[in-house]
Length: 281
Image (cartoon, rainbow, N blue to C red):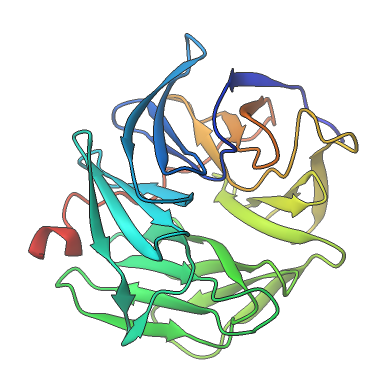
């Protein structure tokens, strides 16, 4: 299956991350030189709103419209607040961040973070930063380059992608215990994830240029694939946009544009608390 797709906006600097502010209707993307872009969806234009010190990977937006950005070059989390980029966090769970890759909020204000570690080193971890500012290692068994992550709509689970592990796992945030594998994706480098209203998940891959849909029954189908790597080129992260959340946007790390896909799916709003650990620093 290949759903209809087109370029939404062009001229970005190898965007890896995308996130949508559902309260304000603003789409954000990152660039490899620290750029944080705000995208005008209707006009197909963008502007740089802030800049960190290095390569921006995953993004999340809180309830006040502040953007949390993972900076791979700097090894830190940054927060963009009203056009100002603040270096927020470089250590969590008693360890210096190695490669902060993707942030995701829980409904209680906990910020979950994948620290990918290093490729082929199996030193990654998943971290949790509580609303009071305390932090811990949530899991260090998903160590094979943990990447995209998302908290389920009911707040009970954190789904985590292992890019090197070629799989998606879930962590029970209430009962604890070992992570459980949700789906294996042999021969791929999965990267991003976004949930749908019907209980499925969209999974985007750095390699190959492919986006999957995992339905609630666990059946996996290809939503879109681009063997030429032009419309989809290392589609790392995805998010749903618009008031109805029925349009899917993909970043393209391998090129300079964002892709808009008419996937026939409706996404859920990621959790976006008004208050979290940043407010107690």
